[in-house]
Length: 228
Image 1 (cartoon, rainbow, N blue to C red):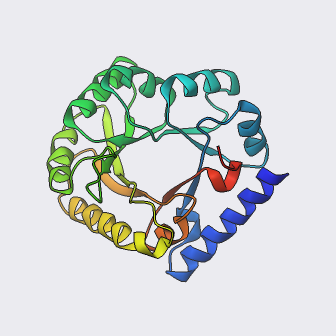
Image 2 (image 1 turned 90 degrees about the vertical axis):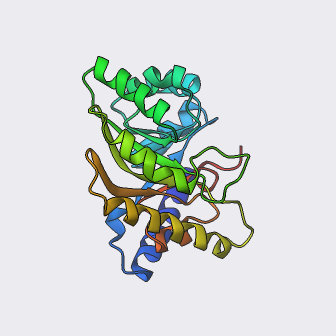
């Protein structure tokens, strides 16, 4: 029951934040970040109507998805992805949020071609230039988009970022605004196999601010499942 009530509160908060900024709340998808969480907790969330789940670790995710079922949910890969794990990510995940090099995009494309899939991806921007986080620099992302857009088994569906953690979520707003600007800059280029449908930004501590600034995908774990 706690997971169900947590989900309801977060959805209510998303709706209020969207309406505050004039967005349609239905454009925002809540991704329940289920890394390090047992299968029974994920099943509770599914039973409570949660559809989208985010996983960070390939091996852990594969084991869960094999048991819960590939079609039981929409699966998002939100962790750092190594090229040698791309074939597993392509097999198991509907959307890969963390593509930050042309090399990785090319390997995902190669693996997707093997199984006849058009893989949906997001390009990850290291929005605050933090050395501890993955993602391409802002000045690299347009070139990556131009090159990755040439791959015929990829579809670039938007951008993702992880701003620094702030005690006051208002401090993250500038980074969410910037990702939206970058998205608009890429959209204007009319690149092949590319549209900026999604902005994956906002986590448990700052998702309402992210929604106000145009997030379409918010990644919430702790506020749903509790602290790890």
